[in-house]
Image (cartoon, rainbow, N blue to C red):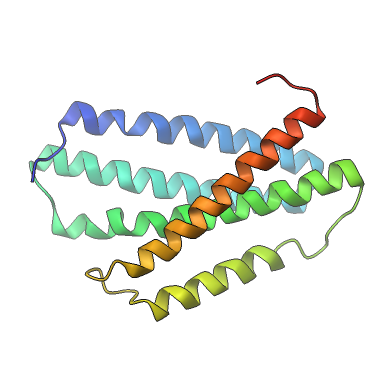
Amino acid sequence: MQTATIALALEDFIPVVLSSVGFFLLSRMLHDVDQRLGRLAFVGWALLTTGGLLKAIEKLVNALLGGKQESLTRFDKGMFNWLAAGFVLVGTALYFGKRDYFLHKTHPQAWVWPMGILGACIFAMFQTGFPDPNVSAWRFVLLGVMTLANVALITWLVQWSRAYRLSM
């Protein structure tokens, strides 16, 4: 198996930093709409940034040491845990923030929805072989949740930008 070069590993930090800045700005905007939702979004931002940084650090250490380090396998495999939870939290905050802003409907238990989704996700993970690193089925559960939450997040951002009549 070929390892990444140091330059390629360093390049892996660019999308992490840029997306972290974007999610921070989105979280700050949601905090301006509703402080509770802003806190929810900031927790999601922290999880997304952590997941991206762990993967980039794992790739950089492997490039520096010239091969796959077994001690860092959890960084690579754990990335989906952080990203799935982060996308669910930011997506939920954006959904309820959009409702608060346009429909003037507040949702006092905005934390209930993402905790229910993540609870079901954790249950499905344990049913499919988590925490065994040799079993991959649980990662597909997280990948599915992460993908759905990311698509929903992008859809809501596009809707919000159209409502503001922002060009993209």
